[in-house]
Image 1 (cartoon, rainbow, N blue to C red):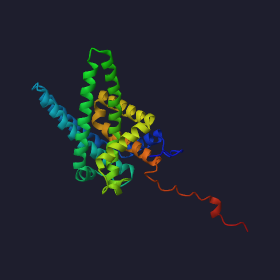
Image 2 (image 1 turned 30 degrees about the vertical axis):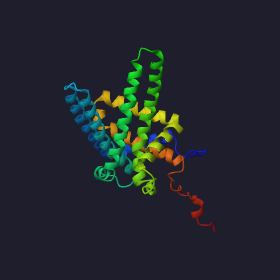
Image 3 (image 1 turned 60 degrees about the horizontal axis):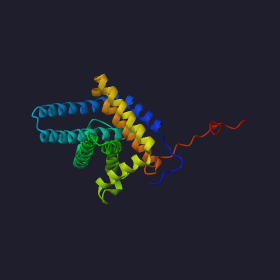
Image 4 (image 1 turned 90 degrees about the vertical axis):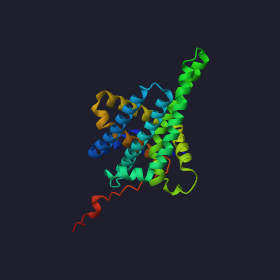
Length: 262
């Protein structure tokens, strides 16, 4: 993908659009956040119960399944955000539509995400605990790779929605959608490092703020975060020419409508 010389949507413009829509669609933002928070609470309780068994494999299996369930809910939040961003009659029915249209694809994507994340994290932890300085330095390098991977994951669900319903809809009959989503998310991350770093930082800060405010985690976190990642992803796709915005309406001067003087 070649980046045009003059991007049409900036990072902060996309953030303002997401913030405005989160406020304008406050009811849907709250519903999205509550749904994700309810699943987060259920998964946390289940993993807490498994931890008491003191069986590492059982706990890892619980984390794996919990991550997949959270991904399914996050997909629904992202799809609702996509419908809000595109002004395509968003409603609570979007959750059902998302699971019907994206459920299995989300399952495969989340399995890959969880597996890769666990592998990178376990390797990083092992290297950082090594007594050898060289090994610990390598562990820090793996930490940066983990941060890049997590940032790429923020792009992956908006890209999945674009693949099925949006800009990449015409590619459904071509090569593997999973390979395309993963490849494009990594390209967007690496090719736009300042943009991607800003996205990661704001989502992280927003998560910390909502966590410590407690009520914010339940009422606002995923509703705003899903809108933000959708707008940021679409901003880059617009800048690359993948999404073509309709032309701005021409403003006709008032002078053209004036009657000639007698």
